[in-house]
Length: 174
Ligand SMILES: CC(C)(COP(=O)(O)OP(=O)(O)OC[C@H]1O[C@@H](n2cnc3c(N)ncnc32)[C@H](O)[C@@H]1OP(=O)(O)O)[C@@H](O)C(=O)NCCC(=O)NCCS
Image (cartoon, rainbow, N blue to C red; front, side, top):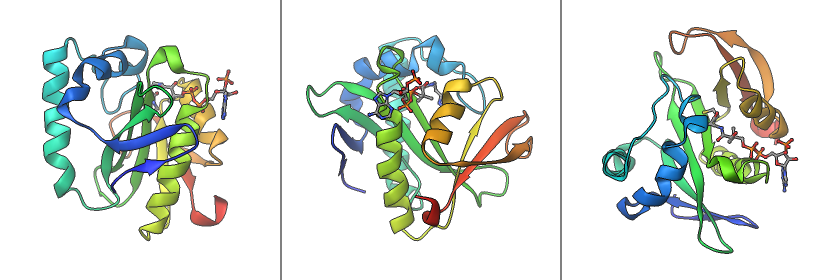
């Protein structure tokens, strides 16, 4: 993908040097508890480096538009969060957009701004729809999906062994 810039943000590939700052995202209970398929708190910088290592290694082999990216604030270079596009199990036909922002930066519209840019980029790659899934009680994620103009299309247990609300967006709805 290279890099994508928005008014306030830079969306770029992860590097191993992000480990310390990434812990403020993936080491935070408020973020980790909502991750699918299972909650996963990253405990320390070493564990964060291992996670990033796996992401960095996997990135070139993913089929576009799949990928994982870091969201950085342009003004001061602060690592705000992560974004990913991946194929949902078990059929691997539906692309899922997911986002994580460090909790002390929630409420600034960063997830919305970064997601809009990634959605536009993904549609430029020729895919026809994108999904987001959220646990029914993940109100912030559901609000973010709606803010992006995603449409609620139902709830399902088909992707993972748990009930999830499903949202969808198509190019004409951008
Ligand atoms: C889901 C998550 C990314 C949403 O973060 P967020 O900051 O609430 O999301 P948004 O970027 O849409 O920001 C919206 C808020 O910023 C405010 N805002 C401020 N400036 C804004 C702007 N320029 N544009 C849009 N919203 C703006 C909105 O009014 C809204 O405030 P509110 O929550 O008080 O109503 C975050 O809660 C998170 O990381 N959760 C844990 C992980 C998770 O559940 N991910 C989703 C499933 S994988």
